[in-house]
Amino acid sequence: MMRVLVPARLRKAVRTWFDSRYISAADHRQDIKDALWEVQTLRREVVTLTAEVERLRTAKPPQDRLAQETAESLDRLLQNEVLVWQAIDELRVRK
Image (cartoon, rainbow, N blue to C red; front, side):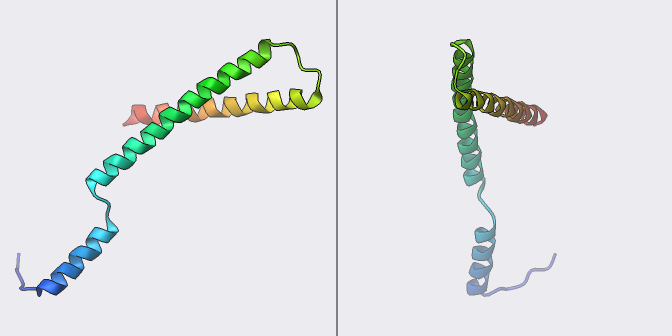
């Protein structure tokens, strides 16, 4: 390996350029923690919405077409949410 004298100004410029292009390990860990917190928050919301769908299912059948279509749409939405969570759980297992 060959060493070369490099002016301090140039060395500082190169280090600054590299630092601006890469995220630090601490920042990366914080991003992961923030993402996990967001996932957990969304999971709690899905649980709440699932309970609401079950409550609506057991309630008196809606007489209004709009209410019926809304309930069906919400049910499909929650089914898609379950698929998303299953995919997230599968990704966690792979780590």
